[in-house]
Length: 518
Image (tube, rainbow, N blue to C red):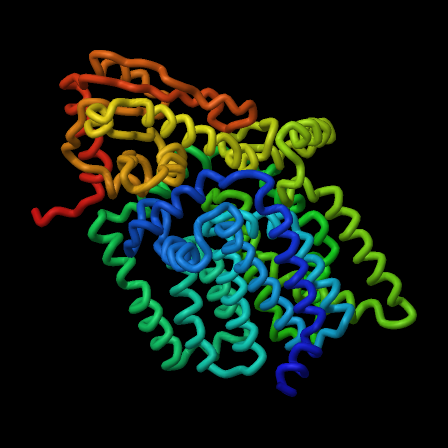
């Protein structure tokens, strides 16, 4: 009991920040609905596998455990990313303590992470991104211990960290490659040339082998997915917007992460940690060369904020201590200004009004969607409204059907967002399964469905060709829904073309990602 009390006292500042982060996410967790990706990951959690078309398996696996323990309500599901965000914040605090950081270092460094719009938003969404941030930071922790202790055996910690990071989000390879390159070009390269490096590589490959085998058995869908992103999203990247977004996504923390970068470059006494400055620069360069999305770099800043807290504490010794408190005040002031972008504190109508003012001030990049256009709401916010309306309208219509029709009705969503939403709001297991040929749903779709009727949600202009009778039975009318006007169709007596196109689509989706023995 004495040791626990002593530990709590020692880490009281870190624990207070962790508690504050959890509370702020709890208070804003139910202001909006689920974001579209959350529906996909909850669907994956019901169909556990060693991989999915666009994502690795870890998020689905953890979500399955989490929902068993806490349920799948909006508040319960939002707890999961909040917990991961809290874990990242605590780990950053641990690093500051290991660097002998005092009150100033802890408050400045942790405030930068706590107030960052990027970290606040990702900790509010069930997506692989928040897991990615956590494992990037753990990767930095391993290098920190390697540099501090100068022991090659520290490399062994990379086995679980990078393996789990890979199983959470494949983009861990960006930071892992940057860290490796930084170690090679720096004074720590001698630590790499040992048997521990071989054991690390072998152990890591062994842990991710099931996922690699899954990728092989499914003809490497990760490559196809990245190719699609390159064609539809990554090509819209504009360099000036990329660098501007680097500043905006951690806006309040700019004085801290820049201080951390400067401290790492010029501090001779602790030059063993300069590897993190190299890793940061190489991460930016790698993502720019590969035309990655601007937010791929978010987690690379965490370690800089840790050292930024140390830097400000060392630079503002008495009688200059007041400067540190000015920096803190500036961060708090900027974070209050950016808070509507960080967390969904405004309802859509108020957010639109606030956003129009920011666009006029030249801050439209934060309202830019993957299509490269500036919209009324940030993309994540527009993706958190309207899905409940879709689910309720679909199943309310289904309930009006005669029992003889219900037993022969298939429910289909044109893309994973609408399929996932209908799946989540399905009243119970007696209602029909929801199918789609989009993303992970292609894994669960039947090749030869038996149907006489279909509820079809989507924009396809082929719908009149698929049924002898087609009726528009509803639309999603939420004014700020990203898919505003999404139609709900009811078709009866399918034509031969429906079955021909279904087979063709099956071959192009699930069939293409199923390795044969030929």
